[in-house]
Image (cartoon, rainbow, N blue to C red; front, side, top):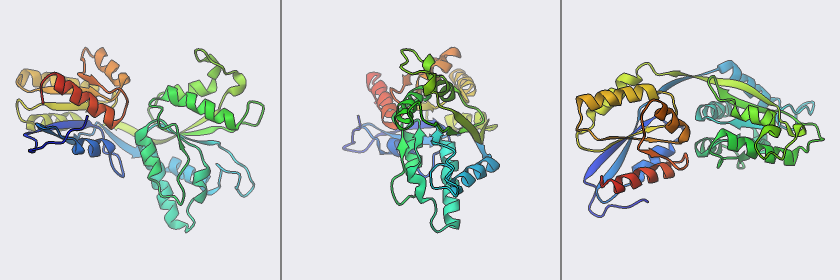
Length: 314
């Protein structure tokens, strides 16, 4: 879907990403900046919806577990406590990466055994964040193609049960999560026999310990910042707003409806990263223009460009 302009793009199309920029780099920012068509260049801009704060005491607890080698069989008393870690958010990954980096600076050896720990992750962004953690050998990052919690839970069931058969001692998984989260993964793992067409029995159940490592709060200044960014966009030039979660949807819809009344000539389109956010917008009587086929920068951009070509906006 990527096309290169032969004479340089004639217009810059803002793409407002309603999220915080990921670290160490953001795949959406990189991908959109690399895109151009014969008539346009896409310019991403972040408009944060949430403010995040880390639970330092809980991150310190994770750090101590790593120091005690609670995820391997090489602890002081060979007491392995957990079979692996689960990540479903970029903030949890960033908090984990930060504690690993800080502790590695204190210890020359760092955590060489990290590569032995199964790190279950829900999608490409969290996968990239974990793979970016410095390590002498690649970390054991698994499940990155899942795309959602339910699919990741099924992947974990298959992978975990291949390592720990039902009649052997089964260690819990540690789920590093935010204050607000869905219970899809713990619910499925704790009762896989209830899945549709399940091949599992109660013996296949996996215990999950949830540990909150960050909190996310609505950004008090989001409405004002979003309105200011929209006001700066040039009339008659298409503007894309990309929504990554239900957080902030109500405020976004309110701002866009006000914009329709104040500046009806503006051309603002909305894309969602997946069906959960799309369905939330529909409950607000707001139909997005694009829903990405997969929660990846490539599929999001593909959907946006296809829509614009069809509507003759490029």
